[in-house]
Length: 341
Image (tube, rainbow, N blue to C red):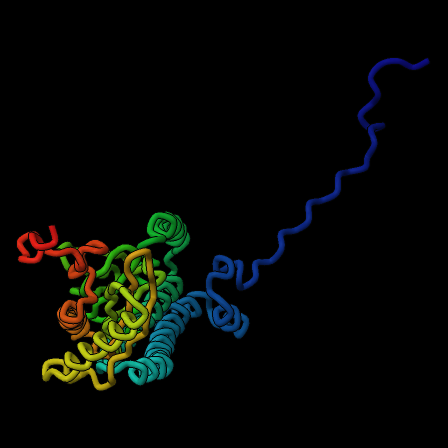
């Protein structure tokens, strides 16, 4: 049995595998990766030195790319704005055709110009981002910050964005304008100001209402086209012919009011609708007369005064009737009162 250290010449003579030779540096590796782009690779493969290829890329290709982006952006801004004007112009013509006051056209032109400017702004921002990317500026931190800021503003300003969009649509469709009498929710008044965000109303008592455009879901416009002055009057139906006499008196009073020069806009004859309500002591008759929205309030006042006077003359107004049997009872100072005793 042999013990001890083995001689060195008896150690295995298998040597480790040699390391593979380094791969030759190609054009992209010598140029710092693919930073040069496809044109750099093409030039270096054609035998152009890397320095010259870099110079051509920096001083020729990039400026040409910037010029190309500027030209394309200018074309998109011009023809995109023209398309917006054409499409929205049709909507403006339809709104102007529905309106009777000639205000829809100018307002729609203003909105079309606003939308065209907004389109140009978007095109310019996109072109600037592309140009900065071509110049080697890293836009990732900027875009990340803009995304966070945009999301924050979007969640916090949803109502504000809704107000502006509603204002644009209200202006284009010309649903109401300055000077119109409208009712929005619980507010009724004359429109004093209309912006893209809020509408200001002046109520009959002088109160000012500020209504955000995004909150306008339903509205009533009392200042467009024609209107009807509607008056309800109570009468006392004393006998079978009282209603017929009251109806004739109301019709006569309404026709006399319609014939006045200040109410010449009431081209149609008045319409006595008839009895619309009744209780134990009175019946309510309704009379309607078509007029302009601006003259409706004055016409209603005149109708009430004329109808009241006519019914009082006929003894059909509730204030001219006494308690039952009072008309037949002799007055306190009547000469026949003492004779009957």
